[in-house]
Image (tube, rainbow, N blue to C red):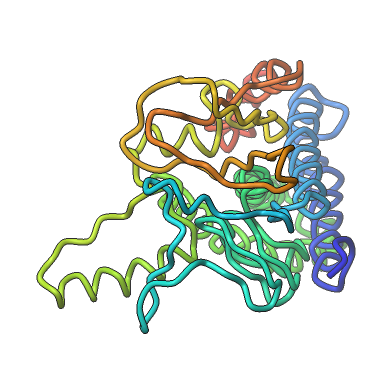
Amino acid sequence: MKRGFSFSVTVVVSAIVFIYFCTVFVFIDRWFGLMTSPGIMNAVAFTGVAFMCVLNYAYAILADPGRVPSSFMPDIEDPEVPIHEIKRKGGDLRFCQKCSCFKPPRAHHCRVCKRCILRMDHHCNWINNCVGHANYKVFFVFVVYAVIACIYSLILLVGSLIDDSQNDKQHSADTFRVAYVISGLLLVPLSVALSVLLGWHIYLILQNKTTIEYHEGVRAMWLAEKGGTVYKHPYDLGAYENLTMVLGPSIFCWICSFSRHIDAVTLRKRPLPSLQQPIIVKDEKKGSCKLTVKPGKAVLNLEIGFDGVLLFFLFWFFPSLTLYPFWSLWFV
């Protein structure tokens, strides 16, 4: 399946454009006035959030979620590498019948994309792409910015309506009634749905699970209880370790989705009790690739580029952005 525009993506882009123009040119303008200091400050702040939202959304659409090399071969000689998959009829090598190739741990076949995806979470119709190892962070950051933008716009909408009623602008507000109604019908359910989605993925990140692994874990937990044992997710390294594996080691660059990850098997950063992210190593002699993940050898995440520093400087105050329309009134 080709990544890019689809009907779902067109709907999302249309909603983003509509909400942005209503927020800046209707809500902010009618509450503060675009030429006032609070109006300019809110317009710049909301434009920054909207820009990062669109940028991450575009990247999530176009980025490859993580392709399994066709020459991948499991390392059957290493007992520490989980190459077997527990199924109802017993264990077997993780082999994809549709792709006709072996699958690394945590990789799954997507019926829509028609290929195996590394650390696949789910296929998202709203980005017309899978969410996997290579684009999970950018998807998560997009959801964060989308939640902030929706709540910010909703506050500006409510504040604009209250200001109109207090200053006898009800007659002029009737002109923008359609914009208020449509924006409200979009922002309220979007704010709720995206907040729930954000909370769900925060839970998954802290547990180092994917959506697929969560549902598989429910069944594994039931089977463990039935057999009188206790099930423990094999990739759980602790909340902070799980968080840094997805968002990177630097807390200041967590909201920067363009930090590059450099996988280095030979670099020892810290001992780990369990498995890490997939590391694909090419064997030049055999002309194949194998996935090796061993305790004590970790993925080294390096934050590259000036964009992380720039974003930290501009958007460190995001947790308080929802209160920005109110404390900006001090500048009147």
